[in-house]
Image (cartoon, rainbow, N blue to C red; front, side):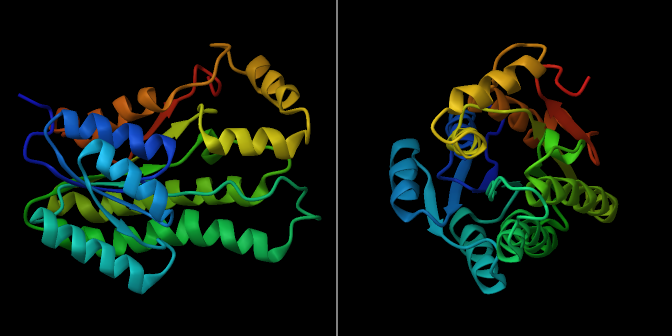
Length: 250
C-alpha cells in the first residue's frame, strides 16, 4: 500500500530536477500526477518516463493557471495535493546592477506563480481538504549578495504560505514550504557559472565551505520531504517552513 494511494497531484516546475524526482516518488507511492511546466520537450519526456499526464503552462499567467488547474481537476478527478515548485534563479548581480525587468521576471514566476496557484487550487480543495507544498529555499530565511530578486521571492512565498495556511485551516487545507540549501540541479549549476564565469567550481567550493554537511543535497532527498508533507502522515503540519539544508541555517 502506497503512502499516496488514490491521491491526485499537480506539480509545477514538473520538468525540473526536483519536480521530476517528486513525481517519480509520488507515482511509486500510488498517486496520479499531472506535471506542469513551460518546457514542453522536457515535460513530455518526464511525463512519459514517469507515467504522468502533463500540461504546458506559464504559471505567471492567470489564464494559463486557470487552464492547467482546470485540466488537472478534470483529468485526475480533483486535486488533493499541489506542489507549487516552479521557479527561476534570475541573474547574479548586485541590486544596483540588476535590471528592473530581471527583477520583475523572477517575481512573476516565483511569487505571482505561487499566488495564482493558491488562488485557483484552494477553492477546489474546499470540502475534501488537501495539502499544498511550496518550494522556497534557504534564501527564504536569510540574505545573500548578488541574488536580491531570488531572495526577495523566496521570502515572499513564505508569507504567502503562512497566510494560505491560516485561510485554509477551516477547510482542512494544509500549506507548508520546503526550504532547500543548494541541490544538485540545473539551477545551482547556473548560479555557480554566473557567480564565477568559467570557474564554477570556485562558487561550489565557497558554498560547500558554508554547509556543515559538506555536500549539496539531491532532488530525491527534497522529494522525500515533499512526500511526507503531501501524505496524511503530516496531517497536523501546516504553516511550517521545513528546512532541508545540511544544517546550513542552524
